[in-house]
Image (tube, rainbow, N blue to C red):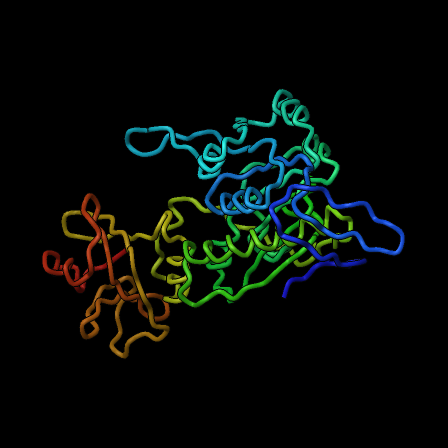
Length: 351
């Protein structure tokens, strides 16, 4: 169920493609929503999550006067500049693009010249200064992938999985100078499946976020929606995700390690080091499963052992089963194939 807060009245809406403003209220009648408004809209976002939301606004014929996204970044060994997913979408529809390195005076003036009535933000990756927040008459609206005030910050999907949460959702909120602290316009919860990864959960939240925003905007623009303050006492902050967060600590429980795998798949992924006689080799764990209970036969932390046809690793509580791995400089392969050339990993240690 969608939670819209303190509605004074609800309006119907026609999702036709006509780009007409809502008609003026007349005596004895209710104002009705007749399609996307011609209000000047700036969209800010960077990754795939934001691209789908931008696509929804385009489909509903919102008047997007500019798309703001991060600058192209060098990626890979060749350090070739790669455009953001949002930039590619904007280019596809010939939308004006801004890629500021920072929100200096020149950037702020550029946004002011666009004369936006509304700014919509989705996973942009930069904090907007107060000068920008004050520009649009309808404010700056953020689509955040959590049920705020939980998991404020840049990586709410990963943090929900790291915590082993069974629910998350989308919040559409008004932005203020804090980090995801603004008043809430609408929220919708969804279940997290036990085997959801960051990749699969993101896909579900993309659809939820797009639909909730498109349901909420007409109510906000028609001024039939009263924002609700967040309960600041219940707030939690996201852990920033870095590449080295994928290094597994075998003192953790198997369930905790599996949650880390879910949160960090596909990037940055999880890994360990195989302690060999001739040194340590980095071993990426592409696919794993687990059981909460440790086997009756005791093993040391990080020790690799066979369990029937499976290959397990002893954790602080329970067992991680290796299913698909990748040695440094090699391709990823199923564990059965890996054992054909690396049988000595049995009874050795990962660390």
